[in-house]
Amino acid sequence: MLTLHNYFRSSTSTRLRAALNLKGLDYDYRPVSLLKAEQKAPGFLARNPAGLVPVLELGDGTCLTQSLAIIEYLDETHPEPPLLPADALGRARVRGLAYMIACEVHPLNNLRVLQFIASQYGADDAGKAAWFRHWVAETFGALETTLAASPETGIFCHGDTPGLADLCLYAQVWNNRRFDVDQSGYPTINRIFEALDGIEAFSRAAPPAQPDAV
Amino acid sequence: MLTLHNYFRSSTSTRLRAALNLKGLDYDYRPVSLLKAEQKAPGFLARNPAGLVPVLELGDGTCLTQSLAIIEYLDETHPEPPLLPADALGRARVRGLAYMIACEVHPLNNLRVLQFIASQYGADDAGKAAWFRHWVAETFGALETTLAASPETGIFCHGDTPGLADLCLYAQVWNNRRFDVDQSGYPTINRIFEALDGIEAFSRAAPPAQPDAV
Image 1 (cartoon, helix red, strand yellow):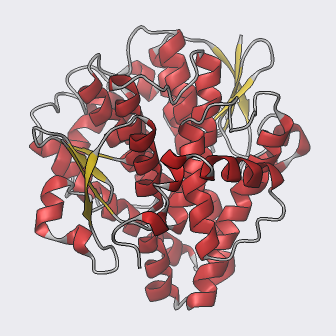
Image 2: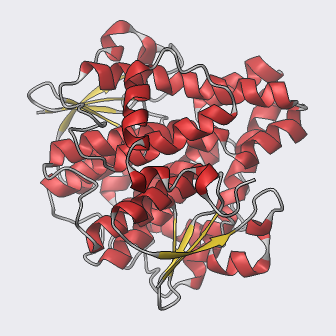
Protein backbone atom coordinates (compact mmCIF):
# COMPACT_ATOMS: atom_id res chain seq x y z
CA MET A 1 0.00 0.00 0.00
CA LEU A 2 1.25 3.50 -0.83
CA THR A 3 1.18 6.28 1.74
CA LEU A 4 1.06 9.86 0.52
CA HIS A 5 2.33 12.46 2.97
CA ASN A 6 1.02 15.70 1.57
CA TYR A 7 -0.99 18.90 2.00
CA PHE A 8 -4.23 19.74 0.25
CA ARG A 9 -3.10 23.15 -0.98
CA SER A 10 0.46 22.23 -1.99
CA SER A 11 0.68 22.37 -5.75
CA THR A 12 3.38 19.70 -5.91
CA SER A 13 1.01 17.47 -3.90
CA THR A 14 -1.83 18.16 -6.33
CA ARG A 15 0.38 17.10 -9.25
CA LEU A 16 1.25 13.86 -7.59
CA ARG A 17 -2.30 13.05 -6.47
CA ALA A 18 -3.52 13.47 -10.06
CA ALA A 19 -0.70 11.21 -11.32
CA LEU A 20 -1.57 8.50 -8.78
CA ASN A 21 -5.24 8.77 -9.78
CA LEU A 22 -4.42 8.57 -13.50
CA LYS A 23 -2.40 5.41 -12.85
CA GLY A 24 -5.27 3.94 -10.85
CA LEU A 25 -3.10 3.63 -7.73
CA ASP A 26 -4.72 3.68 -4.30
CA TYR A 27 -2.98 5.47 -1.45
CA ASP A 28 -3.37 6.24 2.20
CA TYR A 29 -3.73 10.03 2.53
CA ARG A 30 -1.69 11.51 5.39
CA PRO A 31 -2.12 15.26 5.80
CA VAL A 32 0.95 17.35 6.70
CA SER A 33 -0.08 20.89 7.63
CA LEU A 34 2.39 23.40 6.21
CA LEU A 35 0.68 26.18 8.15
CA LYS A 36 1.44 24.32 11.39
CA ALA A 37 4.99 23.58 10.08
CA GLU A 38 4.40 19.85 10.50
CA GLN A 39 6.85 19.30 7.62
CA LYS A 40 9.62 20.40 10.00
CA ALA A 41 8.69 17.89 12.74
CA PRO A 42 11.26 15.11 13.44
CA GLY A 43 8.87 12.38 12.29
CA PHE A 44 8.49 14.00 8.91
CA LEU A 45 12.16 14.97 8.56
CA ALA A 46 13.06 11.30 8.99
CA ARG A 47 11.08 10.69 5.80
CA ASN A 48 12.42 13.75 3.97
CA PRO A 49 15.34 15.73 5.43
CA ALA A 50 14.42 18.63 3.15
CA GLY A 51 11.19 19.14 5.08
CA LEU A 52 9.06 19.36 1.95
CA VAL A 53 5.88 17.67 0.81
CA PRO A 54 4.94 15.48 -0.93
CA VAL A 55 6.59 12.24 0.15
CA LEU A 56 5.41 8.95 -1.30
CA GLU A 57 6.11 6.07 1.07
CA LEU A 58 6.24 2.66 -0.57
CA GLY A 59 5.05 -0.53 1.11
CA ASP A 60 8.58 -1.35 2.34
CA GLY A 61 9.02 2.07 3.93
CA THR A 62 11.13 3.55 1.14
CA CYS A 63 10.36 7.27 0.95
CA LEU A 64 10.42 8.99 -2.42
CA THR A 65 10.70 12.77 -2.60
CA GLN A 66 10.37 15.53 -5.20
CA SER A 67 7.04 15.32 -7.02
CA LEU A 68 8.47 15.17 -10.54
CA ALA A 69 10.93 12.42 -9.63
CA ILE A 70 8.08 10.43 -8.07
CA ILE A 71 5.87 10.94 -11.12
CA GLU A 72 8.63 9.71 -13.46
CA TYR A 73 9.04 6.69 -11.14
CA LEU A 74 5.30 5.96 -11.31
CA ASP A 75 5.40 6.28 -15.08
CA GLU A 76 8.29 3.83 -15.32
CA THR A 77 6.83 1.27 -12.92
CA HIS A 78 3.20 1.62 -14.05
CA PRO A 79 3.47 2.45 -17.75
CA GLU A 80 -0.28 2.68 -18.47
CA PRO A 81 -1.57 5.22 -19.22
CA PRO A 82 1.73 6.88 -20.22
CA LEU A 83 2.42 10.37 -18.90
CA LEU A 84 5.09 11.06 -21.53
CA PRO A 85 4.95 10.65 -25.34
CA ALA A 86 6.68 7.71 -27.02
CA ASP A 87 9.16 9.81 -29.02
CA ALA A 88 12.21 11.56 -27.53
CA LEU A 89 11.37 14.96 -29.08
CA GLY A 90 7.83 14.75 -27.72
CA ARG A 91 9.16 13.84 -24.30
CA ALA A 92 11.55 16.81 -24.44
CA ARG A 93 8.62 19.08 -25.30
CA VAL A 94 6.39 17.78 -22.49
CA ARG A 95 9.17 17.86 -19.91
CA GLY A 96 10.10 21.37 -21.08
CA LEU A 97 6.51 22.57 -20.58
CA ALA A 98 6.33 20.88 -17.19
CA TYR A 99 9.62 22.45 -16.05
CA MET A 100 8.47 25.91 -17.17
CA ILE A 101 6.01 25.62 -14.29
CA ALA A 102 8.00 23.40 -11.93
CA CYS A 103 11.32 25.29 -12.24
CA GLU A 104 10.23 28.85 -13.04
CA VAL A 105 6.89 29.53 -11.36
CA HIS A 106 6.23 27.22 -8.45
CA PRO A 107 9.61 27.48 -6.64
CA LEU A 108 9.21 31.24 -6.39
CA ASN A 109 5.63 31.12 -5.18
CA ASN A 110 5.40 28.46 -2.55
CA LEU A 111 4.54 29.17 1.05
CA ARG A 112 8.09 29.31 2.42
CA VAL A 113 9.12 31.96 -0.09
CA LEU A 114 6.04 34.07 0.60
CA GLN A 115 6.74 33.78 4.32
CA PHE A 116 10.35 34.78 3.73
CA ILE A 117 9.59 37.95 1.76
CA ALA A 118 7.17 38.87 4.55
CA SER A 119 9.78 38.41 7.29
CA GLN A 120 12.71 39.76 5.27
CA TYR A 121 11.16 42.62 3.36
CA GLY A 122 7.94 43.24 5.26
CA ALA A 123 5.71 42.19 2.39
CA ASP A 124 2.06 42.23 3.50
CA ASP A 125 -0.73 40.16 1.93
CA ALA A 126 -0.98 42.55 -1.02
CA GLY A 127 2.79 42.47 -1.47
CA LYS A 128 2.86 38.69 -1.36
CA ALA A 129 0.06 38.50 -3.93
CA ALA A 130 1.90 40.95 -6.20
CA TRP A 131 5.06 38.82 -5.94
CA PHE A 132 3.06 35.68 -6.76
CA ARG A 133 1.38 37.28 -9.77
CA HIS A 134 4.66 38.71 -11.09
CA TRP A 135 6.26 35.27 -11.39
CA VAL A 136 3.16 33.69 -12.86
CA ALA A 137 3.02 36.43 -15.52
CA GLU A 138 6.74 36.03 -16.32
CA THR A 139 6.18 32.43 -17.38
CA PHE A 140 2.50 32.07 -18.24
CA GLY A 141 2.75 34.53 -21.14
CA ALA A 142 5.46 32.39 -22.72
CA LEU A 143 3.61 29.19 -21.83
CA GLU A 144 0.45 30.50 -23.54
CA THR A 145 2.46 31.55 -26.62
CA THR A 146 4.19 28.19 -26.80
CA LEU A 147 0.99 26.16 -26.38
CA ALA A 148 -1.08 28.32 -28.75
CA ALA A 149 1.58 28.28 -31.49
CA SER A 150 2.26 24.56 -31.62
CA PRO A 151 0.37 22.01 -33.72
CA GLU A 152 1.41 19.47 -31.08
CA THR A 153 -0.93 21.06 -28.55
CA GLY A 154 -4.24 19.21 -28.58
CA ILE A 155 -7.06 18.94 -26.09
CA PHE A 156 -4.23 18.86 -23.57
CA CYS A 157 -0.66 20.23 -23.54
CA HIS A 158 0.57 17.53 -25.92
CA GLY A 159 -2.04 15.82 -28.06
CA ASP A 160 -5.26 14.43 -26.68
CA THR A 161 -4.09 12.50 -23.61
CA PRO A 162 -3.14 14.17 -20.35
CA GLY A 163 0.50 13.93 -19.27
CA LEU A 164 3.30 15.35 -17.16
CA ALA A 165 2.89 18.95 -18.34
CA ASP A 166 -0.86 18.81 -17.69
CA LEU A 167 -0.26 17.69 -14.11
CA CYS A 168 1.84 20.80 -13.51
CA LEU A 169 -0.53 23.13 -15.38
CA TYR A 170 -3.60 21.87 -13.50
CA ALA A 171 -1.96 22.31 -10.08
CA GLN A 172 -0.56 25.75 -10.91
CA VAL A 173 -3.91 27.13 -12.11
CA TRP A 174 -5.46 26.04 -8.81
CA ASN A 175 -2.68 27.94 -7.06
CA ASN A 176 -3.24 30.99 -9.25
CA ARG A 177 -6.89 31.12 -8.18
CA ARG A 178 -5.88 31.62 -4.56
CA PHE A 179 -4.03 34.79 -5.51
CA ASP A 180 -6.64 36.11 -7.95
CA VAL A 181 -4.35 35.86 -10.96
CA ASP A 182 -6.00 37.42 -14.00
CA GLN A 183 -6.20 34.45 -16.35
CA SER A 184 -7.84 36.36 -19.23
CA GLY A 185 -4.63 36.49 -21.25
CA TYR A 186 -4.25 32.71 -21.26
CA PRO A 187 -7.10 31.25 -23.33
CA THR A 188 -5.22 28.09 -24.30
CA ILE A 189 -4.11 27.40 -20.73
CA ASN A 190 -7.69 28.00 -19.51
CA ARG A 191 -9.13 25.68 -22.16
CA ILE A 192 -6.69 22.92 -21.17
CA PHE A 193 -7.42 23.46 -17.46
CA GLU A 194 -11.16 23.08 -18.04
CA ALA A 195 -10.61 19.91 -20.06
CA LEU A 196 -8.45 18.49 -17.27
CA ASP A 197 -10.98 19.49 -14.63
CA GLY A 198 -13.53 17.40 -16.49
CA ILE A 199 -11.45 14.28 -15.83
CA GLU A 200 -12.22 12.58 -12.53
CA ALA A 201 -8.52 11.73 -11.87
CA PHE A 202 -7.79 15.46 -11.87
CA SER A 203 -10.87 16.86 -10.14
CA ARG A 204 -10.44 14.28 -7.37
CA ALA A 205 -6.87 15.58 -6.88
CA ALA A 206 -7.91 19.23 -6.60
CA PRO A 207 -7.21 21.02 -3.31
CA PRO A 208 -10.87 21.47 -2.22
CA ALA A 209 -11.54 17.74 -2.62
CA GLN A 210 -8.96 16.70 0.00
CA PRO A 211 -9.77 15.59 3.55
CA ASP A 212 -7.60 18.34 5.11
CA ALA A 213 -9.09 21.13 2.99
CA VAL A 214 -10.26 24.12 4.99
CA MET B 1 25.65 20.13 -35.80
CA LEU B 2 24.29 21.29 -32.46
CA THR B 3 24.17 24.96 -31.53
CA LEU B 4 24.17 25.91 -27.86
CA HIS B 5 22.73 29.32 -27.03
CA ASN B 6 23.92 29.96 -23.50
CA TYR B 7 25.79 32.14 -21.04
CA PHE B 8 29.03 31.26 -19.30
CA ARG B 9 27.79 32.06 -15.80
CA SER B 10 24.30 30.55 -16.11
CA SER B 11 24.17 27.48 -13.94
CA THR B 12 21.59 25.77 -16.16
CA SER B 13 23.99 26.34 -19.06
CA THR B 14 26.86 24.79 -17.09
CA ARG B 15 24.77 21.67 -16.43
CA LEU B 16 24.00 21.27 -20.09
CA ARG B 17 27.56 21.91 -21.28
CA ALA B 18 28.84 19.19 -18.95
CA ALA B 19 26.15 16.78 -20.22
CA LEU B 20 27.09 17.48 -23.85
CA ASN B 21 30.75 16.94 -23.00
CA LEU B 22 30.04 13.67 -21.16
CA LYS B 23 28.14 12.42 -24.20
CA GLY B 24 31.01 13.43 -26.46
CA LEU B 25 28.79 15.79 -28.48
CA ASP B 26 30.32 18.76 -30.28
CA TYR B 27 28.44 22.02 -30.35
CA ASP B 28 28.71 25.53 -31.72
CA TYR B 29 28.89 27.88 -28.69
CA ARG B 30 26.73 30.99 -29.06
CA PRO B 31 26.97 33.41 -26.14
CA VAL B 32 23.79 35.15 -24.95
CA SER B 33 24.66 37.90 -22.48
CA LEU B 34 22.12 37.99 -19.66
CA LEU B 35 23.68 41.20 -18.35
CA LYS B 36 22.91 42.86 -21.69
CA ALA B 37 19.43 41.21 -21.68
CA GLU B 38 20.16 39.54 -25.02
CA GLN B 39 17.82 36.73 -23.97
CA LYS B 40 14.94 39.21 -24.40
CA ALA B 41 15.91 40.18 -27.97
CA PRO B 42 13.46 39.14 -30.74
CA GLY B 43 15.96 36.78 -32.35
CA PHE B 44 16.36 34.85 -29.14
CA LEU B 45 12.66 34.93 -28.21
CA ALA B 46 11.91 33.26 -31.55
CA ARG B 47 13.99 30.34 -30.27
CA ASN B 48 12.58 30.42 -26.74
CA PRO B 49 9.54 32.59 -25.96
CA ALA B 50 10.39 32.29 -22.26
CA GLY B 51 13.55 34.35 -22.79
CA LEU B 52 15.74 31.92 -20.86
CA VAL B 53 19.02 30.18 -21.58
CA PRO B 54 20.08 27.57 -22.44
CA VAL B 55 18.54 26.65 -25.78
CA LEU B 56 19.91 23.69 -27.72
CA GLU B 57 19.28 24.07 -31.44
CA LEU B 58 19.34 20.84 -33.41
CA GLY B 59 20.62 20.57 -36.98
CA ASP B 60 17.11 21.00 -38.42
CA GLY B 61 16.46 24.18 -36.44
CA THR B 62 14.36 22.55 -33.70
CA CYS B 63 14.99 24.44 -30.48
CA LEU B 64 14.93 22.55 -27.18
CA THR B 65 14.50 24.46 -23.94
CA GLN B 66 14.78 23.80 -20.20
CA SER B 67 18.16 22.29 -19.29
CA LEU B 68 16.81 19.20 -17.54
CA ALA B 69 14.45 18.36 -20.40
CA ILE B 70 17.33 18.70 -22.85
CA ILE B 71 19.61 16.52 -20.71
CA GLU B 72 16.94 13.77 -20.53
CA TYR B 73 16.62 14.06 -24.33
CA LEU B 74 20.38 13.68 -24.77
CA ASP B 75 20.37 10.68 -22.45
CA GLU B 76 17.58 9.02 -24.44
CA THR B 77 19.09 9.71 -27.85
CA HIS B 78 22.74 9.10 -26.86
CA PRO B 79 22.53 6.44 -24.15
CA GLU B 80 26.27 6.13 -23.49
CA PRO B 81 27.47 6.94 -20.93
CA PRO B 82 24.12 6.87 -19.07
CA LEU B 83 23.25 9.84 -16.86
CA LEU B 84 20.61 7.90 -14.91
CA PRO B 85 20.87 4.48 -13.19
CA ALA B 86 19.31 1.40 -14.77
CA ASP B 87 16.76 0.78 -11.98
CA ALA B 88 13.62 2.83 -11.38
CA LEU B 89 14.34 3.42 -7.69
CA GLY B 90 17.86 4.60 -8.50
CA ARG B 91 16.49 6.93 -11.16
CA ALA B 92 13.98 8.32 -8.66
CA ARG B 93 16.82 8.97 -6.21
CA VAL B 94 19.03 10.70 -8.78
CA ARG B 95 16.20 12.78 -10.20
CA GLY B 96 15.15 13.67 -6.64
CA LEU B 97 18.67 14.90 -5.82
CA ALA B 98 18.85 16.83 -9.09
CA TYR B 99 15.47 18.49 -8.47
CA MET B 100 16.49 19.51 -4.94
CA ILE B 101 18.89 21.86 -6.68
CA ALA B 102 16.94 22.53 -9.88
CA CYS B 103 13.56 23.16 -8.23
CA GLU B 104 14.51 24.49 -4.79
CA VAL B 105 17.79 26.40 -5.05
CA HIS B 106 18.49 27.61 -8.54
CA PRO B 107 15.05 29.11 -9.39
CA LEU B 108 15.27 31.40 -6.37
CA ASN B 109 18.80 32.50 -7.04
CA ASN B 110 19.10 33.26 -10.71
CA LEU B 111 19.85 36.71 -12.05
CA ARG B 112 16.28 37.77 -12.77
CA VAL B 113 15.19 37.07 -9.19
CA LEU B 114 18.16 38.92 -7.73
CA GLN B 115 17.39 41.86 -10.03
CA PHE B 116 13.73 41.75 -8.95
CA ILE B 117 14.42 41.86 -5.21
CA ALA B 118 16.73 44.80 -5.91
CA SER B 119 14.08 46.73 -7.84
CA GLN B 120 11.14 45.66 -5.68
CA TYR B 121 12.63 45.69 -2.21
CA GLY B 122 15.76 47.76 -2.65
CA ALA B 123 18.11 44.85 -1.93
CA ASP B 124 21.71 45.96 -2.40
CA ASP B 125 24.62 43.66 -3.21
CA ALA B 126 24.84 42.49 0.40
CA GLY B 127 21.09 41.90 0.49
CA LYS B 128 21.17 39.93 -2.74
CA ALA B 129 24.05 37.81 -1.42
CA ALA B 130 22.14 37.15 1.83
CA TRP B 131 19.08 36.07 -0.16
CA PHE B 132 21.23 33.77 -2.31
CA ARG B 133 22.92 32.19 0.71
CA HIS B 134 19.61 31.72 2.54
CA TRP B 135 18.15 29.54 -0.20
CA VAL B 136 21.36 27.56 -0.65
CA ALA B 137 21.44 26.85 3.10
CA GLU B 138 17.77 25.80 3.12
CA THR B 139 18.50 22.97 0.69
CA PHE B 140 22.21 22.22 0.96
CA GLY B 141 21.92 21.11 4.59
CA ALA B 142 19.35 18.51 3.60
CA LEU B 143 21.31 17.58 0.48
CA GLU B 144 24.45 16.99 2.57
CA THR B 145 22.48 14.90 5.09
CA THR B 146 20.89 12.85 2.32
CA LEU B 147 24.16 12.23 0.48
CA ALA B 148 26.18 11.50 3.64
CA ALA B 149 23.60 9.07 5.03
CA SER B 150 23.09 6.90 1.97
CA PRO B 151 25.14 3.84 1.02
CA GLU B 152 24.14 4.62 -2.57
CA THR B 153 26.35 7.71 -2.57
CA GLY B 154 29.74 6.84 -4.02
CA ILE B 155 32.50 8.89 -5.54
CA PHE B 156 29.63 10.83 -7.05
CA CYS B 157 26.00 11.45 -5.99
CA HIS B 158 24.96 7.94 -6.98
CA GLY B 159 27.68 5.34 -7.22
CA ASP B 160 30.92 5.87 -9.04
CA THR B 161 29.77 7.32 -12.36
CA PRO B 162 28.66 10.94 -12.76
CA GLY B 163 25.02 11.56 -13.64
CA LEU B 164 22.10 13.98 -13.66
CA ALA B 165 22.40 14.96 -9.99
CA ASP B 166 26.13 15.59 -10.36
CA LEU B 167 25.49 17.96 -13.28
CA CYS B 168 23.25 20.06 -11.04
CA LEU B 169 25.56 19.87 -8.02
CA TYR B 170 28.63 20.90 -10.03
CA ALA B 171 26.90 23.92 -11.57
CA GLN B 172 25.37 25.03 -8.26
CA VAL B 173 28.68 24.93 -6.37
CA TRP B 174 30.20 27.17 -9.05
CA ASN B 175 27.29 29.54 -8.49
CA ASN B 176 27.80 29.40 -4.73
CA ARG B 177 31.39 30.52 -5.11
CA ARG B 178 30.28 33.77 -6.70
CA PHE B 179 28.30 34.63 -3.57
CA ASP B 180 30.91 33.42 -1.06
CA VAL B 181 28.72 30.67 0.32
CA ASP B 182 30.36 29.04 3.33
CA GLN B 183 30.75 25.45 2.11
CA SER B 184 32.37 24.17 5.32
CA GLY B 185 29.18 22.39 6.46
CA TYR B 186 28.99 20.32 3.30
CA PRO B 187 31.96 17.90 3.25
CA THR B 188 30.23 15.29 1.10
CA ILE B 189 29.08 17.87 -1.45
CA ASN B 190 32.59 19.35 -1.52
CA ARG B 191 34.20 15.95 -1.99
CA ILE B 192 31.86 15.18 -4.90
CA PHE B 193 32.48 18.60 -6.46
CA GLU B 194 36.23 18.06 -6.38
CA ALA B 195 35.87 14.62 -7.93
CA LEU B 196 33.71 16.11 -10.70
CA ASP B 197 36.14 18.97 -11.25
CA GLY B 198 38.81 16.38 -11.92
CA ILE B 199 36.86 15.14 -14.95
CA GLU B 200 37.62 17.01 -18.15
CA ALA B 201 33.96 16.94 -19.30
CA PHE B 202 33.06 18.95 -16.20
CA SER B 203 36.03 21.29 -15.91
CA ARG B 204 35.65 22.19 -19.59
CA ALA B 205 32.02 23.15 -18.85
CA ALA B 206 32.89 25.42 -15.92
CA PRO B 207 32.05 29.13 -16.23
CA PRO B 208 35.65 30.43 -16.35
CA ALA B 209 36.49 28.10 -19.25
CA GLN B 210 33.89 29.61 -21.60
CA PRO B 211 34.67 32.02 -24.46
CA ASP B 212 32.35 34.72 -23.07
CA ALA B 213 33.76 34.53 -19.53
CA VAL B 214 34.75 37.88 -18.10
